Each structure stands twice: as structure tokens, then as C-alpha cells.
Image 1 (cartoon, rainbow, N blue to C red):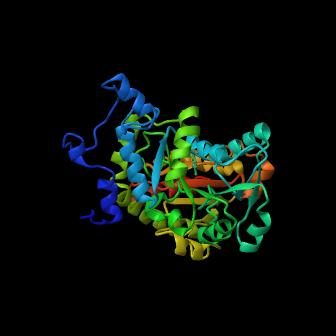
Image 2: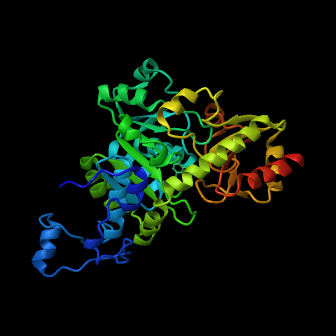
Length: 394
Ligand SMILES: Cc1ncc(COP(=O)(O)O)c(C=O)c1O
């Protein structure tokens, strides 16, 4: 009899793990080992030749890491998963696996600053060019796909401007042309958005964020078809070596168990704070996918379960006004991450996107007064009061 299919809230706790395969331990054990012993020389030979299942060396696979990889694959509704030492290790392993010198990558208009840096590096060193696209119509995407386009790379909601890309629409164009669609799903986590079910091919996470949820791990995850994951694991992951440590994988398994509970609260708090910020006279624009006036509101309603826990906004005034406002905050911490229990604020133009040239930043909509708030799990009234008192002082 097959295993009964259970719901997301159950899968985050149980999927990918069988206690009876691990000494009946309720919680997945931490296999903190660099290598595994072979019973004989012949067994070692067979494992290396792929003729016998089993672990060899933790850069090639580890039981704790494997549980995490199997679990994220279930949550993203994909065939297989792979864990990395950082979100950027995951992004680079995927992009290097999918491209060769002379290829082209079509990207959403706005990506995380270090992803931008990686795209520049690929261009300079390996002649792998890229173009940014608004991806707002099928016709535009069809024209922007070049004969040498090796993949389409998307962030949605886009960091930090919160613009959205219609994943089903992009995937329908790309699928016809046989071009893989890669999506960085960090802002949503699989609880809010499952791109593989919308026709995308590869999902990437900076697991450092909502998946970890506690601000104590840097990690990345990738989910896709079995063959692709096998290819990445045997090439760009194994040989470049950006693997996750077993302890970090163990912490992520622990964090994942509360993902839906945490995200419900992040989203609930964000919605309340959005309503406050939208009406505040010292705040100019607020970018939040849950805003009915957001130009991509209908896309958010179609592909996201809830609008998320991130709000970007511009302060009336100058860069200095925005920085003065940040310096007045007491509870909210100035830090560049997101998805933690603590509410965090950052100034993309001088922090996460400082590496992006000003001209490109302008095209991405990153102005000097733009701030990004990662709404935490504190009482929303306390977060609002902190914003209120800091706004009063500028
Ligand atoms: C959307 C997005 N993708 C990728 C990354 C990179 O992840 P990491 O810092 O885990 O390498 C980040 C980090 O902030 C991010 O926000």
C-alpha cells in the first residue's frame, strides 16, 4: 500500500525521513562526519563505480543532507533536491551547469545584487551574455529569446522592488522553445509559491531566509528534474564544492518544521504594517504584492498563496533622510537578510544592490530613498510603534 499523501503542513515535518532507517530516532540524526567507511576494498570500488548504493564522502552526499534534499523536493513538488553552502553557491552551480561559453541568459528586470555580480562575471570571463527583461508579455519574451538563449532566470517578487513576473506565462513561452526556466523562490518559500507546478524547471532558494527562519545559517537549495539534479550534483556541485555542512542541514530541517506557522505570522504582520505605511504622510510609495493598487496584484493573487512578509517603501526626502530614519529605529534592526524572527531593514542602493551600477539600479527601480523591510514575528503593534517614532523624528 502506498504512503498516504499528506498536506504541506505535515510534509514540512515528516517528508523524506523514516525513523526506522535511523535507529528509531524521532528527529533526523546529525551525521557530522566527513567520510564513510567501506567494509572492503571491493565495496569501495563498487560505491565509486555507482554499482552499490551508499555514502562515500560528505562532499558527495551525507545522510542528514539527503533528508533535507528529499524534503525540499517534496515541498516544491519536484523530483529531486540538492543542498548548498549558500544561496549564491546554488545560483552559480545552476547557471554554470546550464550554460557554456557564448550562451545567453534572459533575466527578470531586477535580481539580487550578487546574482547580478555573477552574471557580470560570467559575461567577462566566459562570454555568457545576459539581458534584462520586464517579462510582461508573451510577445516581448518571444522577441527577447535569442538563438543562443540557454535559460531564463527569474526572481518574483523581484528583490527589492516587489515587481512580479507571471511564471505560468513565461514558462509557456519557454517550454515551447525548450528553454529551461530557473526561478529564485527565496522571497516566497514553497509555502507561498510552487513554481514547478506552474511549468518552471528549476527552483533555487537562499535557504538562509524563510526556510531557515532563525538567522543562524547560510545555505542554498535547488529542486528540479532528477536528471538535472544528478548532473549538477556530479559536476558543478561536486567539483566546485559548495556543499552544505551536515549541521547546517540539520538546522534547516528544524527550521522547516515551522515554516507554515512562521510565514502565516510574517504575512499577517506585513499586511497590517502595509496598511499603516500606505497612509503615512512621510512615506512616499509602498511596494507590497498584497496592495490592490500594485500593478501586479492579479499575478500575485494567481500564483502566490499570500503576499509575503516583505515590504519595500520610499521615504519622502533624500538618501540622507532615509538613512536618518533607519538610525532612529530602536526595535527594528538594520541588517541585510530577510525571513528571520527579527524585523530587519536595509537600504538596497548602498547595501544589497551596491554592486549594481547606478544606471542599472535606476532601471530596476532602486532609488536612493528605497528601503526594504523584512517583517518579523514580533507583535505587529511594537513594529508599527517603532516605525512611527522613527518617522516622527525625520
Ligand atoms: C533573492 C535572493 N537570492 C539569493 C540570495 C543569496 O543567498 P545567500 O546569501 O544565501 O548566498 C539572496 C541573499 O540575500 C537573496 O535575497
